[in-house]
Image (tube, rainbow, N blue to C red; front, side, top):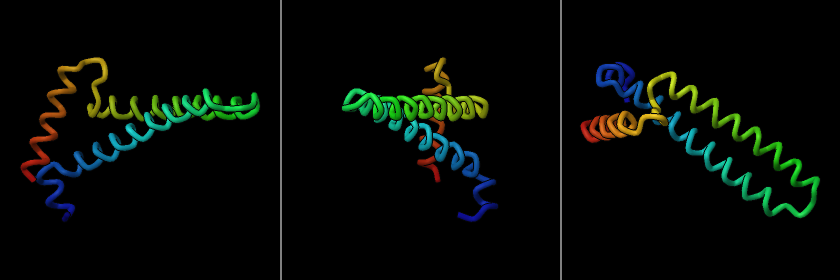
Length: 96
């Protein structure tokens, strides 16, 4: 899509928000997968490596969450605001 048109209809911000949301979802999946892998590890050495990976995955998730909250793209502590934001984004996507 043309950059000028994206700016006029507000899609440039929505595109950034969608990318950040996808990254947050991927980070959540990484945390979940690392946690599951720790429980399946056969040796203490492997568990140690996986625990370190889990810690890093949790820290990445926190960074992405804080970034999205600072931009007003994510409201984990206010479900009503998050629902309204999701509805607004869905409307915008349908109107494009």
